[in-house]
Length: 196
Image (cartoon, one colour):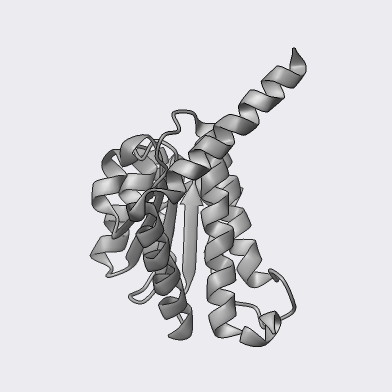
């Protein structure tokens, strides 16, 4: 009985991955994400990321791989996740929860930076406000999304929408793959010696 559940979950995960691999828009979105992250870092830009719940965990994971290391030692690269509890609660208290990420984009973002928004629904108001703020500042935006992309899919410069999956866990499993592959691809360009 339990083995059946495990097997079904793994088969569902594989079907989601196969669907992603078979969708040219997903692969093209990843290529554009890689190019945008490389361009930003090459020009001294900052990578910013945000999300809610499990997607915030993914945003934090994304940032720490740049400031720490991914495969081998190399100089730290500038990335930040909007996840500081004191900042989030201050902004939420003063301006409302919809503004928690937008205010940080306003504070830290500049043209040439990259904002990575992560949302399984694509409809979180605080994510939409962050995208809108980034656009006013000339910051390129990426959306790792699910469930058709929601409103965010039409707002971001680079939408990457997980197909097939209808549950947050399956969508998030693909999001972390996209993030890891992007980090590796950019690191290979910036520090090819790490992959010799």
